[in-house]
Each structure stands twice: as structure tokens, then as C-alpha cells.
Length: 73
Image (cartoon, rainbow, N blue to C red):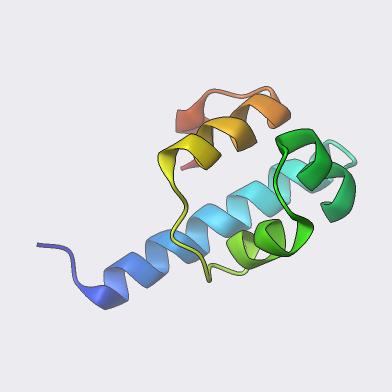
């Protein structure tokens, strides 16, 4: 079983990776959110590790970044 604290670490690491890849590709948060078809505040919350991201949205993020889903983890 995964503890609550472990889940927080996973969300934080995921968010940091999304931010890193977004910045490497030169996207602002707003432009990236548009590319993902997600709201910019949602992207911000993901990057801060505050959101438990649905697999559908993980797929949208990976597609916008042009990476395999595995590269986000």
C-alpha cells in the first residue's frame, strides 16, 4: 500500500518533471495549457504537486510535450 506521504512525493516529482519539460520547450504556462486543452491554473497546480492528475490529462500533457508518458515519471 502506498502511503499519503509517498503519494505527495509522486505528485511533486511529476509536477517538477512537467515544469522542466515545459520550460525546455519554451512554453509559458498559459501557452502550454492551451496546447494541452487544459486550464492554466490546473497546469500550475500540477506543477506544484497539488493535483492528482487523471490518466487522460497525463496523456494530453505527454502529447503536448511530444514525449512518451513514461518520460513524465
